[in-house]
Amino acid sequence: DAGITQSPRHKVTETGTPVTLRCHQTENHRYMYWYRQDPGHGLRLIHYSYGVKDTDKGEVSDGYSVSRSKTEDFLLTLESATSSQTSVYFCAISEMGQSSTDTQYFGPGTRLTVL
Amino acid sequence: AQKVTQAQTEISVVEKEDVTLDCVYETRDTTYYLFWYKQPPSGELVFLIRRNSFDEQNEISGRYSWNFQKSTSSFNFTITASQVVDSAVYFCALRPYSSASKIIFGSGTRLSIRP
Image (cartoon, chains in turn yellow, purple):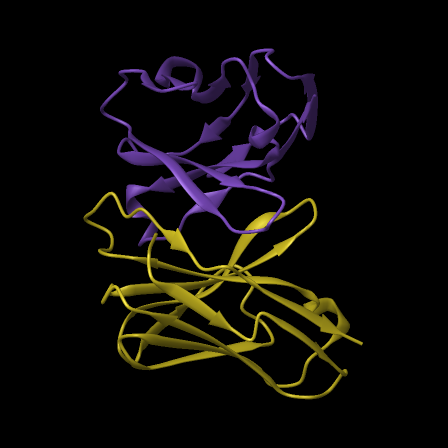
């Protein structure tokens, strides 16, 4: 199994509060991703990173920001959480980018509830 | 459009039956990669297989087999002699070569194996 951890694993917060989710990897993979999973939608990409300090938006990036100051850590921040951001959040990593087969391996997920 | 369609939302079969999960994809790229992931009730996402667009050879791994047909843009997954432990949500996914590491997921098929 790929060495990916996410913290916290569960969080309940209130509307309007900031929330930061952390993804940590021990594989030294270059690419890291944040997805959200909602019923009927499968997984949707929020943001991804292709290196330290290099990030880009996915299809559902509004209301989220990310940072990557170290290869092993990728943070997802909800600046002001809303109920629509209640979801399960998955981090993923992959070894190489566009020129590769790019299999993504997933972390265990974080269940976030915004009241 | 680039997308993945898993038309079967839920499937329920009796243990030891064979079951096929359908996946149809659309992409304008001539080079692309297809994936299957399994999400058991515990919630993690487990990588099962990756297939390159230039390799149409079918693959068998134990009770699992995959049928890739470019002519019909399909990448179907068959479980032979199903077991209760196969109960999970299964996701098909597509990464077009031009997508800069972004994977497009289908909405998933929930498979229930009854004893």
